[in-house]
Image 1 (cartoon, helix red, strand yellow):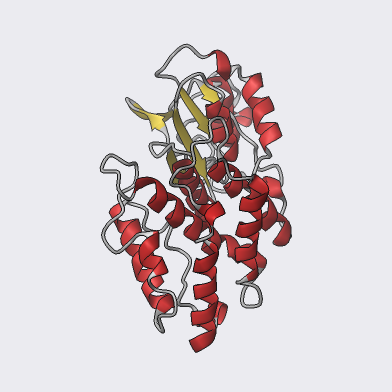
Image 2 (spheres, one colour):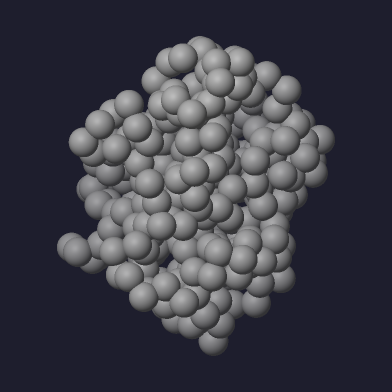
Length: 310
């Protein structure tokens, strides 16, 4: 029987309550989403030799459960997650939260009790993903995005800063007509992908899996996007962290002074970003518009190149 989303969401939010008092609400996601990731991949891939994620000995959710009540629980959780990260080239992505941080989690028995209770919440039946066969209903992805919405609100930030609502994503997918794609080698790209919700939602509208690519300036948000593509069963999705304006990652294979072209492009641009021209140099790379007069060229050339590529 499929788990009700309301039950899933209630349990996830209860886990946030265990962290209150020691850190800003904007930091909850670093801990909750890390544990959500460990739980999900352990349930899905632990006994699957062909799984998208390798679960090394001593680095599964069951190993986390074994740490409940351990006086060194914070330190041991950090070691476990670091081991899982290293085995899957996710170092610096899923091990950014420090469970042994006394300033955030508490000291001594407080840390032991808090982390033991946190792990117990993830043991609840509604967070068991082993036998979740629900079709056309991405429970784990929806749970991830539910937390994104709430973390954005709790931290006082605009949700649009790193999350695009599902309804907007679906509309943009219709606009680019990706549902009628006939090329199985087609690609889709988001140059300001945030946590990846728009990119993933749009890609899911295609009639078959597509190669997805994204770039995000904020390092921590790019890390969330990398976890998100795995949680959505798209482990091959490529996400890179850097400023797309001044240092675009995806270049033409034959000429790195030109940008790579993609079949589909979606974006929720950073409209609130006032310093988007920082790092752009007049007459620099990607500035190949000889038909433009000098005063119209330079800083805007890269943006014009993006528009022309579309």
